[in-house]
Image: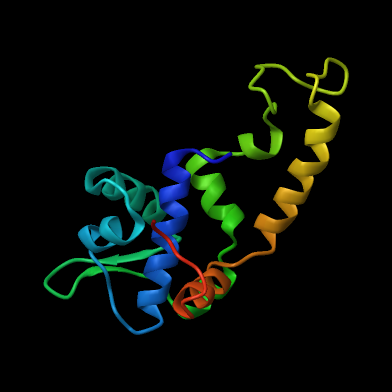
Length: 144
């Protein structure tokens, strides 16, 4: 459903948020290791998230990435998805056709439209803070 980059971005944001709740900054290596993502790819993703102002970054020996708790409570998963994947998850065709609309629908168009709307609703109402708390509680995982 999401690109690999988007999956890694969501995992990275959850990991950074959990560490930020403990007043810790994390470096790219730690993010990559804890989100099961290649380090160079993680660095690229982190740059995109930083440019979108979804994370803060600091240089130096105590540097790394963090998310302020107030920001964490505001950031919706939909924002991460939009930064990394754009709006294709909300508008794209279920079977990947370039053009799919109500006038020229694919075979899954009608069924997928309601799923897409439910997905959008969920992503727009779920914060990174909620996911970080679930992960921190030990009830969820980021890697297998």
